[in-house]
Length: 352
Image (tube, rainbow, N blue to C red; front, side, top):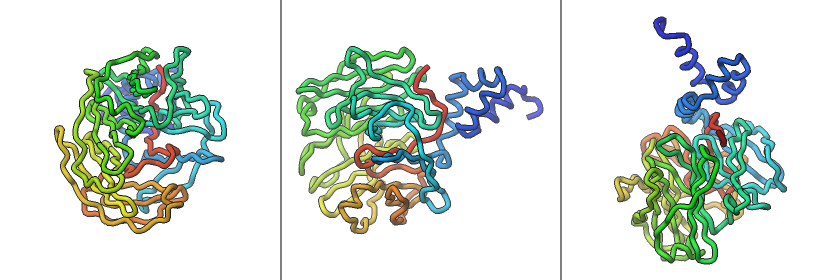
């Protein structure tokens, strides 16, 4: 260490600081401000921030928006901090559509506008344009956040309008939208198909596309972010009895899916993608009965061999599972009403 240049030593120390401390460190001197603002620093700091201790849960209700840590020793929520939205909104009508490396892609429901927002630094960027790009309609559109080979953060926006599908990519680097081709089956344009948010893993964005009735068609649409080509792969071979929901998570750059099926009693299996085929990892133990009113307010997490059922107030119960530790927390089911997200505290900026 004594032989290393002082610049290298400072760089190594600062890339390990919490995101909020990095923000404060920018005011130390001009040299530090310049160093902490480089893309190299932001990229390395982000890679070192993707650990469970930096994970936070953001929850939005009609009155407040709060951020809570997840305490590792008891896997419960820690004390909440109230967050003030840095952009205009009406009665917290903000939906969280996608997240990646500390950035959230959100929609202002009263104007349909899309924004990129870092809740740790409070910086945000409006993505709407006068020519109607960057406007999102719930239940028709799908959003995915990703980073390409040139380290450019991008938003993929799939729009379904009166049987016409349009696909658009926003680039943070050039601050503009452009149209790209998308060849798919015509039936996926129907509002009877529900598109998930995109999950970025290994240079590909993945979407589940599920037909909204029992026994319907379920597929996974893949978007290669560098070639900008789409392809379709099969859904895991889950029973087609009852409703089907697939929740995708990126675990150490390997795609996993929590596939739930059933009506009054849900069966949930964990699958991993190997090539273009799914392999079952485990069948989760039965979840104790939960009232419908409470079910609409809960989210499931999994980590360290345990399954947690959480309300916005805290942990409801834990189910132990025989599986390898995930090390970080991953959502097993969607947040109800797009009113929450698990994100990592970083200094990644929504604009250049």
